[in-house]
Amino acid sequence: GAVVSQHPSWVICKSGTSVKIECRSLDFQATTMFWYRQFPKQSLMLMATSNEGSKATYEQGVEKDKFLINHASLTLSTLTVTSAHPEDSSFYICSARETGTSGRRFDEQFFGPGTRLTVL
Amino acid sequence: GQNIDQPTEMTATEGAIVQINCTYQTSGFNGLFWYQQHAGEAPTFLSYNVLDGLEEKGRFSSFLSRSKGYSYLLLKELQMKDSASYLCAVSRAGSYQLTFGKGTKLSVIP
Image 1 (spheres, rainbow over the protein chains, first blue to last red):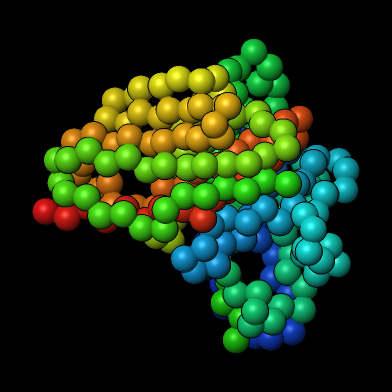
Image 2 (cartoon, each protein chain N blue to C red):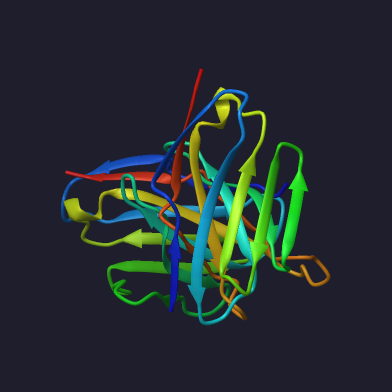
């Protein structure tokens, strides 16, 4: 199956700093990528939908100025957590939908391995 | 909006069969996915249903009833490695976005 990578896999930062997380589709092109956040023992919550070459669409309650998303190419989307605070500590997971999947039975999302963010 | 319910935890015995239920309410439906997630890892795809009926894939089967807003994941011949969280997710029509349930943590015991 298609492979999605995330970097870094884990990061520890001080409160007030910014952290950038990369999501890459390694062997396919992804017009659309999704960013999720998962708190301990909770399910995945969609934060935003990232479309190549256009602005991301944020879910209700997610601050777009705090969580900056850039989808500059068909294989890379980045999430920057600006001025991070301890409450932003979470597991961030991206997924990617393969471009040009018309005729497929369904649009499968391929998930990255996740990034564990800890803000001190 | 969308609302997805599934049990929080379940325990089953190695070699047995377990059924994990999921009910959903949605304003636009484009299919239902089941994912397996081990702690600290990303979800992995198990199954997809968009039409009523049963989809079988090896030890795993998934059922959907659109009229009832109901699905289940059936795991047969349970193995210890099946201990994980199982996430039910509904695809929104026209957007490819997924809304996940809170997940069911399955513990397989000897």
